[in-house]
Length: 303
Image 1 (tube, rainbow, N blue to C red):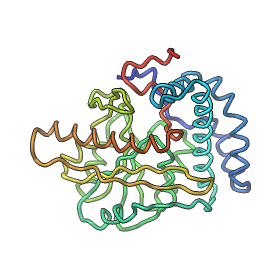
Image 2 (image 1 turned 120 degrees about the horizontal axis):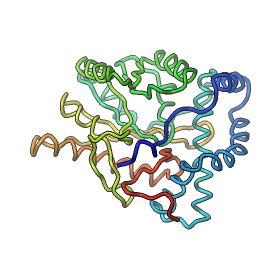
Image 3 (image 1 turned 90 degrees about the vertical axis):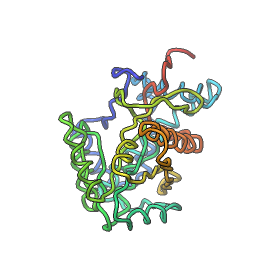
Image 4 (image 1 turned 60 degrees about the horizontal axis):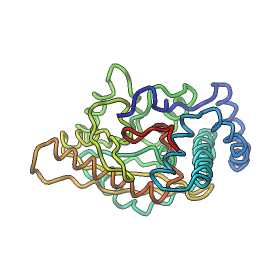
């Protein structure tokens, strides 16, 4: 399991003043100007955030088998795309509305909205899942989105404001575990709950899956809830295609027949999710944004 000290904090960088300045600038500037500036900033970020750089470099070297130079160039590209994802979020905060969404799997998602029972949407730290909540408004069923409670105040304020306009309630993860009661309440009411399912955050409630050819721990929480409330699970991934286009991939996670133990069914769903995530990561390897040692017993100091 990844040690707590080795995990990436997941907080948007910069001061509150800097974040407000970025939002104000993107209200009048094209996002591509922000991308150009980001291209110059990324090398310095890689230099001073050594652990995150090494984690991604080794991801390309050992999970994709790229040679050293290609791994380095891919690592730069990965950080650059992550910077673009951050700029895109702030552009939406600033009222930028030129982003388009290609959603070939939309019928599957709409079918879940029409059903009376709840549903769990399993996301991951690939691409820009947050943007789907900003760009796709619907009012058939409330969606409850589990978010990191320690995010920067300015980011959290803008995030919650836009999500509420689209019938999405943000539920920050809290130390008092009150978010668990809100999730249970939402599923009992037949609402949707969206949560990332690729980070254990030090939890022992996980299952080891084969992921990109090596063992990695995945949390079981979402799939335990699915079994508890007898609700379906959709895996949803939002990937950047061009400067203004995102594509949403939606997959149904099969629920095992009522055979075997409850734990076995939960583990089977977790592994099915890991396989869907692996399929996406192989298609979009540069949009993997877990900047810490993800695989079990992996040593980021080796070449």
